Length: 373
Image 1 (cartoon, rainbow, N blue to C red):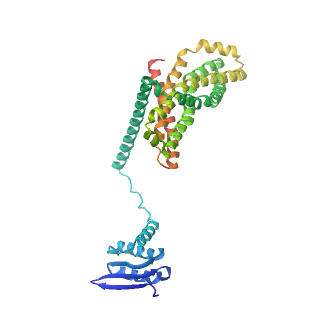
Image 2 (cartoon, rainbow, N blue to C red):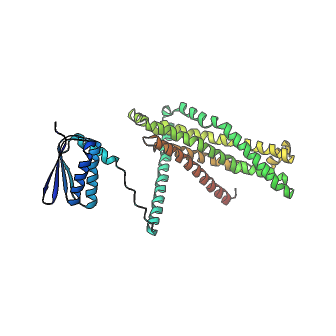
Image 3 (cartoon, rainbow, N blue to C red):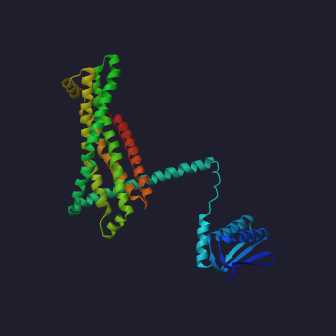
């Protein structure tokens, strides 16, 4: 058997290589030398019709010669490759290291304005998508009222347990500690003015009006929005959502409505538990640190704290619940087909839900201050 052969034909300033036989690492040196010499002179054409075997070393030599020819602006053609040769050449071409990207250009004022505009447009589109999911939720609620047999009551009870009952310990403990901290810090400051008794008003207004429901919503956002996104996103990754649609199951009615309704029902209850725990914690610390007895604490709380302080906090609860539920369900439906996407969307849903809750609370605070409540 004869070894591999490299035949070179020159015509009109161009070089044509005809390769015959099996090319491997043993023939790499002459192949590289001949190709480099030909590329340095002019156009090159390589005929692979008679090649019986082409390994990665020979393919690398051909690809490197092709790149060198492109850099010099000279034609380079590979003709009559077999299917195996096409496969190995493509694999080697993809495996070559990519050149470092050019350093980013300095942004001009126009580029910065364009970037801001695109960000604003993306934010507006995101808000519109959330409004669309809110409309979808309302539509499915109305549909459930008109067709009660389609409502998934078992799923609602399950999510009420997951969202509300299992969150009671962490919400109660958090609020209790917040009440303790408020009482301790308030007593330290008010003692300087001999106004320790006003620590009861401080605790009542802070917990009932703002901190109780706000911190509860933040905990629920971190705990529940992520759970909604992970559950729905996992179903989307496993194509269960597509299977539900194929079976004629309404995805919004089956997945969104029970979850958001559970939040609407349980978040106000969690808020009340947080308020009670915060007052107990504050009263306990006031008793220990200031000597304000539980009876005196209760009397001053009832006499000096209006019911509107409680109502202001409770009015916010349904809005926080809608925001957390819609953000979590929307993020779950945006999950792609890989685990990385699931993790990104889960993190994004938590951040978005907490940010939206805080912004909404600020809007309510300004509104109630303007109307004098």
